[in-house]
Image (cartoon, rainbow, N blue to C red; front, side, top):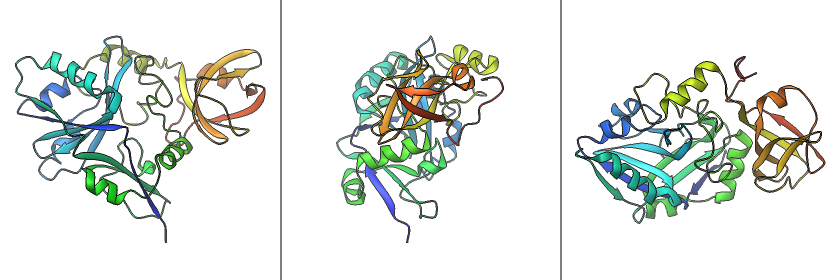
Length: 284
């Protein structure tokens, strides 16, 4: 029988956003289309993955937004939650929207397992079905469900090639395409305006994404976050999070395409794009 692994992500905060103008406010700010959740609000079940960007287009906050009965639940990096609420308050003006922090009573759980394992609690992770399920539940329920470590969850996502802010890259430092958000359903290119949209749309339509996250493999342990990935004597990227001899690295697309031998502190390194992503001719 296939085992379902369930992890309580204790580094996530849960924020509630409610009120008549909640959807309108968020829709004008975030990279993802909240219309995908509207139909679920009578029987909340869905989630979307998105970001709030700087006007210059770099990722300031990323998060999951879950459908809730009277609005939305935002699951976000705990270290960014207070600043996120401050930012929303700046944009709220006269909108009929309320914000509250539910982190004392609610928690985020993720469930994953073999391909033939039954689903865990909640809907599929909006980024990639193979990531498993993701849900916001009462904290007592989260503790009862948890049977796997946070390290097991990160090993799972690393093997699937899914980068996460704070683990593989810094906030305020890279663009959504660099973080694979376009391939992980984190950017909607057909919705209306949002903060930073012009920059993101230009990258998409011109195909000018210069960096991508690759799954890299080499001698264990690979190294530390930020270590330089080299091709001959030139740096072509930097290492993200690792699990033994496998990890993620943000690499220059043009350099990887040259086909030269990659190495990390002299040790050979292989690199491949994640299964969810297919390098387009525009990126080559």
